[in-house]
Each structure stands twice: as structure tokens, then as C-alpha cells.
Length: 320
Image (cartoon, rainbow, N blue to C red; front, side, top):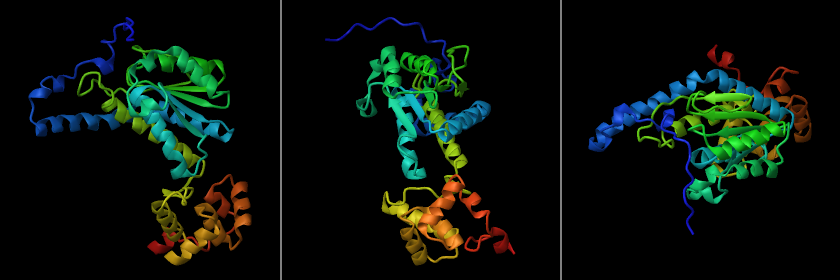
């Protein structure tokens, strides 16, 4: 039996709900002309993210601090926002060999909402609170609520419960604080403006959300030593052939080894690029290399400070 819609407060004042003056005749444009307008609108997203730099940097620092104390980053959202959180969480383990529990994504409506819209789920505050209880959120964790329009009851309730449980809280929205306020530790506002299609936050707001989440987890993982320069040195090389190839090429690029020798070294390291590099660099076995890495907090550069690199290629030497 269908339930009668519950009256809600007007949302027409929200930035994400307003009409975009550039697209009022969108349905009368040629595909090429409509493309040009959409492309121009999309180009403004990165600039909007850039203007939110202070809050995003603060969020990265909070997340890194939580990870270092054994806590988690937990995204929670509804619709597009929730799906993007789940997406970012799912991509961290193969890219950074992070424990799957380190970054988690929760979407209103549960797993079925990943494939098919469950619109009413975003209005159920009790479910947001329940999600925090079921995740056993604690003071060690960071909970990041994502709500493009800033008003999602499910997300607001989750953030309030997370705060009650002592967690660090972050909020991401694409409307000004004056239009949707919330109590949290870091409040990120990426003002992308009215959408191409009024209210469709899967567009610019969704793109902005993806950029912000990419930034937080990527820069956070870099701070933990998951890269050497811009190279993945902690990827899951056993996940698929593509990652085996990438891991082999990383070992090649950071040593004097040819491809076959690099592959052999990687195999001896049980697929761990970091371990393979330290084994080669120091001429030691796998167990000892892993001990050295543990003592350096998993950071390859620090693990190499004790002795002058012999296997790593020096850019300065190549330039000379």
C-alpha cells in the first residue's frame, strides 16, 4: 500500500534547487549547443572545489589522524551522495592495499539502493542513527556525511549520533551554511551553483563530491606512505593481471632491474611492492625487509634513509 507523502519545508531557496539561467531553453538547443553549455558548467566544478581548500585540507588531516590511531573513515549519504561514498571506499583496497574496514561507505536504503533508487530512505532519521550504532562508531572514527542539498534527514541524524558517540564528524554539501546548518568538526561547502537541470545534483554536485572524496582518501593515503612520489607502492598486485603488470613496472622504474628480474623480486616479496623495493635496496630477505618497513611506519623513503640507495635510480644522476 502506498503511503501519503509527508509535507516538508520548502527547498526552493537552496542553491542546488535554483534554476540555471544559462539553461532555461535547454530543450530547444541542438545537441552540440547543449554540450557546450554543459561542458562550461562542468568546468566550474574544479574551481568550486578549489575554493573549499581550507576545509578539505582540514578534513584530510582529521582522517589521517584517525587512521593512525586505528580508526576508520565512514562515509554516509543517500542517493548519488551515498553511492559515491561507497564507490570511493571500495576503490581504496586495490589501489592502496588498505584494509577494507579502513574506509567504509553507507547508503540510505542499503545495498539495493546502489542499483535502484530508494528515494524515501533519505527521510528516515532513525535509520541514520541505527547505521552509526550498527557500525559501532567510536571516538576513534571519522564519520563524513554527504548531502549535496545539505538537508538530508538521514545524514543529519547520522552525524548527530556520531557526535554523541565521540567520533570526529565531517559534512560535505553544495549549499551555503546559511541555507543548511549542521554541527560538525569540519564543514565542507563546495558551491557549484544551480544545476544544468534544476535540482539534479547527480550533475555538478555529484562531480564535486567525487573530486572531494578522491582528494581526501588519496592525499590521506599518501600521508601514510602508500605512494613513493606518484607511484603506487602499496597496491594489491595479486588482484588482477593489470595490477601485476603495474606493480612490476613500479619495481622496474625504482630499481635497476629488467622486467623479468623485477617480476622475480616481486614474487619473492609475495606481491608487495614496498617489500620488493627494500629487499633489493638493502640486499635482505623478505622478513627482514618487512621489519624495516614496519619500523619506518610503512614509508619507503624513511626505510631507505639508514643507508645510501644502491638499487634506486637517481633522477639527478640521469640528468647528469
